[in-house]
Image (cartoon, rainbow, N blue to C red; front, top):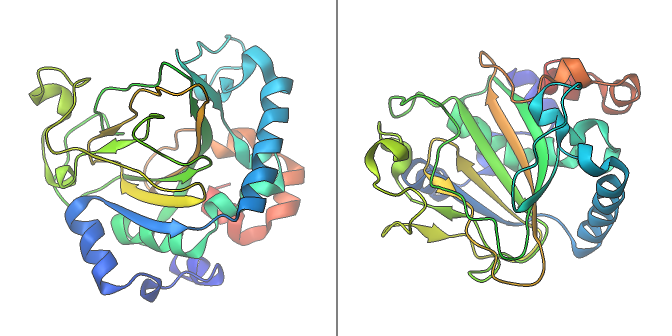
Length: 258
């Protein structure tokens, strides 16, 4: 896998020593503004088309059953399987610095688990503090790692994601030790950053969305990775289209595990 990552321009020195230490200690890392304003506008235009075209089925791939209407998440708009919905989304799983950050957490043997869109709607979006793994793990034995690409400014008012730094070293799941995982945690920090920013976070770090108290949706794309020996959130081989294969090439095919 290391050679494939190199072909995508991934190198360990894309992260500074300080960035690596911060990610190791705190379980997250702000990579700064990666998307231009023009890219964001084009991406959001494509997302609007997909939401309209898919209607009640938007995000249904997350249910992993084409025969059952997907029970939409209350208070949020969802899209899934963006890999197969346009070349505009390829950059979300091939960016060298993002991949270098993911590989720093999980090791070199990684693959894309899913590429999804989530928008917290006005008056909603609050999530309990959670991790993206069902069982406690030993510190360092990480299975999954996420990147959140901000398509709007993230603020305290519009439901920005909260993270509890350092909990990537905890062997306890938040629901096992917190009286109310929905409540504000005394050590939590909010991702407050401009649109176009990418934040990588170890998915074993306690995190969750907060309530959107504005009149507009708070939009983001999650490019989620796992170790190569773990199952994907969305089985990429099940959904991959020939047109996608022809577009992305062998290196990206390997990263998708198709």
